[in-house]
Image (cartoon, rainbow, N blue to C red; front, side, top):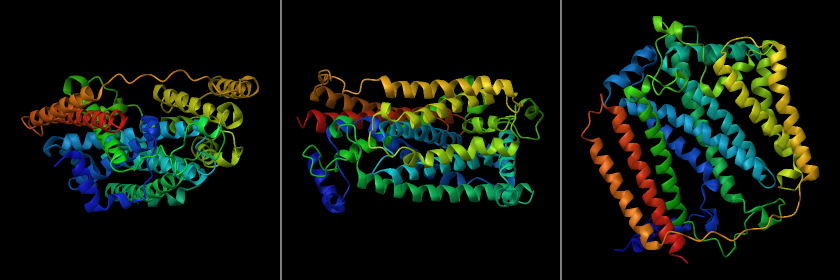
Length: 471
């Protein structure tokens, strides 16, 4: 049975061609259009590894059970480190996806609600990651919980703190953190389904040139360039999933190799830090999770804790939620959106600055003169640059150069697909010669390499079969 007939057989048995997913033109098989798929792939990985970790995690003995997962459970070190870095990948992918959508004007009609759901997903992802990070029971977990309590108190939510952090006992604390972590992940899954539904209904955003740089930017469903979603989108998505999972496995496993681990900063260590009762804990700065460094440093501002917490956490989310209201014009061009573009560039710059500042001086109160030196220049430069672009940039369309010729023939692409598939098999087989407890990092590295190789195989097959082969 040929591959093509096998594909048709699967589609007929599962009625896949009856599912009203939208296909896309060939030029949209580009990672820029599939950044959200990376976040979704990481979410699926988090669900799988999280459920497996639940079999071994004990809220009554959080730190000891976490250490036992690493030292006693077969493949436990891989599960734990990849679950941590799966959250990191999901957060980074969400950041990049959100920025790409913003600068493309993807929050404009008809995608306003889709943008709002994306912002809520981003906030929920940070919340779930914070709670998960706090479950290990190490010194960083203790610091993170203290930061969370401080933020809630500053926002006037002290009465709700017992719901999140319990009645003061360790068992109650970690039981509640675990329960809230699972609840928020379930809400993320629900919001993701709604977000995906709207993305399917609204479709991918076409090139600005196809809609003359104006909203609403939608592809017509009868566009002759659109091919059926099966099996094209499915194969491409499988490649993205495998690539994402490969990175999630390979990066923390490489960092966990003993000769490397001793040089990894504790903020990015794939393993928990020392116990809060250990003498070594005294040498660890009071860091929150790295993705909360900016908010943590905002708490050190000299405006009072309530104002600091509001400015550092609530205001940014509110601004992101109302972006579609702040910019209701039809133009998608960046130069025609100076106010919101200035806001976004300023916000991203502040996020980076405060994160670095928080890493260098955690918990050190900021003096007002240094706040001005750090915060004011990006604000002035971002808005000045945005409005300068608005008033002086050329509005005409840019001349398009000739499209680059395809350099990989179909036969070469097919051969490359086979080679990478063989590499994936070899890496997988080698991993089973290693000890699943003591040599976990090396196994994780081989599994990551295998998945990345298999992803390459899927992408090259897709290229040869559906891009080159369809010409």
